[in-house]
Image 1: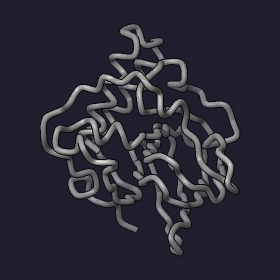
Image 2: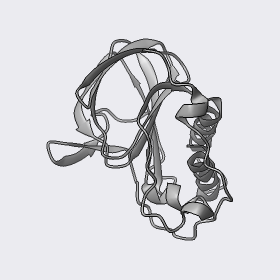
Image 3: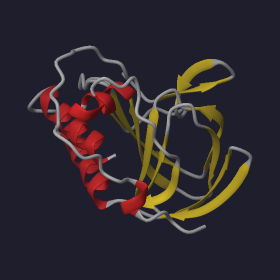
Length: 196
């Protein structure tokens, strides 16, 4: 399979960025739904997590795993996945299709909430995963302020340098223990919402 061109896959939304005033944490961690139950994305402890950073409407986690199968699950939030290091083939089963890709650092996929999939990684990789509450996307722009949700398209095996840079900066902030508090992570999350 060929990668989606980033210009089409993650076309930026145009408009003015809105500031959000709520302090409610809608996404404390990256979870999935399996057999009707909400569970952690992986059954191993993340090497990095935004759970203590108090970011609004977004959660970021990082994992280092050997070859791993992530069995049938549903994403209750919009989901972004990026390979940080390592190269691996991966197989996806979703919407009655079986897809096969090779991922290297910077390769990502974007899935709208409600996506049901199964992913089998064939090699050791360092993953970064992000759960994005629909409110982050709708409140990021004046044009979408009154929308209940923004429709995202499912994209596998794409490359986008701007999104990758934002994710790396968010991870760096967490590694530094968020010296500016939640405000810096929230501003990066807003930038990510506009880019996605």
